[in-house]
Image 1 (cartoon, helix red, strand yellow):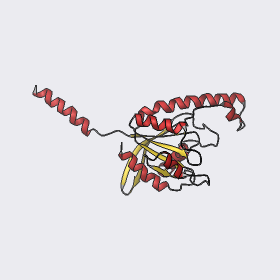
Image 2 (cartoon, one colour; image 1 turned 90 degrees about the horizontal axis):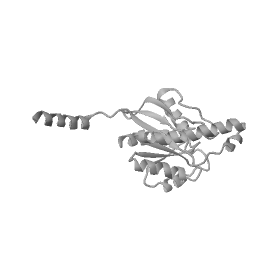
Image 3 (cartoon, one colour; image 1 turned 180 degrees about the vertical axis):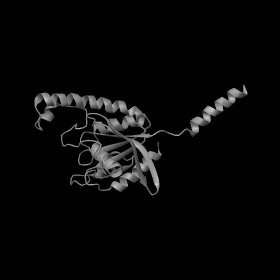
Amino acid sequence: MIKVIKNFAKKIFSGIFKKKGEIKLGFYGSPNAGKTSIANRICQDWLGEDLGTVSKMPHETREVQAKEKVMISRDGKKIEFKLIDTPGIATKIDFEDFMKFGMKKKAAQERAKEATQGIIESIKWLDDMDAVVIMIDSTVNPYSQVNITIIGNLVARNIPVLIVANKIDLKKSDIKKVKGAFPEYDVVGISAKSGENIDEFYEALFKLVKKV
């Protein structure tokens, strides 16, 4: 009986003090919100390399891309995580939208098919995330069905969230509108392209990871 109690206690304490594995940090948002751009900037800043390809054409990223052991430091503190860049989530994909960029019909249809599979993959990966950065294009209406759906899914899973209002370098940017749409969340305004406010972003990232 004593042995059983000891084993039970050992399991409890090993569970309490067990070190958490590498934090899985996902980047989610609509197509062209800047997910891959910020992922590339992080990888360039701390690893000296890019993660993925950036394009003006929607759904350039159609498969989940990941980078292991990304370590960033600030004020003597370090965090390490697995960076996961996901395909943009959309409520509708029309192959004709790709043809506007000069693609042939067959290629556009194939891209639309791949983009659809990418969305399914992004949603499936939600269950594996420890924390999520939601990228929002601050030049468009932030209160979209996609953003609401993503946030709703994360709340249901009790996953910590950081909202990043991207493209603040553009005239149409309205970070106040983003903050107004999601007042209960931390919102950081940045330009993934120019690097504006990137230090503020890293500071917010540290706070996000502490919630995991």
